[in-house]
Image 1 (cartoon, rainbow, N blue to C red):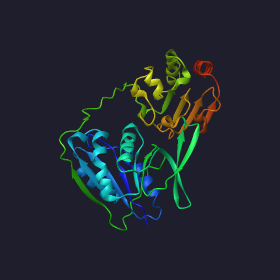
Image 2 (tube, rainbow, N blue to C red):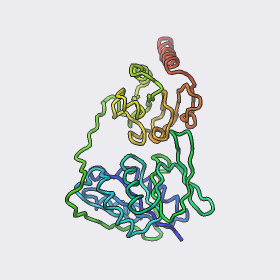
Image 3 (cartoon, one colour):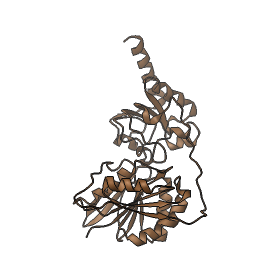
Length: 330
């Protein structure tokens, strides 16, 4: 018996997040025989045509949920609407990409429909006919494996953990769209806009090289070292971990990770970054990863192509000086 899935996408101003392809890739991996039991939920202000287009292109069922307060991601409203939808379709898996908003939705749904919730899923395997989900714990120091005994489970999927490729099966016609127009006029929370401040010379998504700072830099003034290394390259940008941005050492527009930007440059420097899953979710698709950290056991080394075990204050000035020497004497 094949298990049904509900996949919940995110939209901003009626444009769907590209991460829905990763959700479809994850869903397809649960059905290796190709039989389609997926329902993709697309919430938004006016997303019916978008849902119809995605249903046709991917040959899947889609459900458009429309309300004026869904123009921007609105977990408060969705957690009111989704339980009824879930009870109607009775899926085995309720899946969404992992971020602060979806974790709020997942936790609320877990209570409302009395189903276990596993956040931050990075992979899964089948053991004794049960799905066993893997997630990082304690800032990447431990790996946890969880198997569910229930018939229904809520999952949040780490960005980049599963392939974004999805091959539609057109041998059997599946694609159709339903629409729910929410009549509820008042919600406790209404996002009114999204403000993003991006420096013209620091466009992370367009950079070939990203130099990122973690708390291993220890002091705000050492951000200048990061800038110096970035200046070596012609198309480079500066990034940072969440805690660096929380400290105000870099603006949030520079934050990389599951609650920040997703980047995939040709070259990524991780400077003083421990390598928690929250950060690596935003950069592990980089072409080449160079990790610099004085802690030889830092999790970042497990995904790095090159690792330097050294204090940043010692290593980065040497790197910059060697570049200056090479530039003067090519």
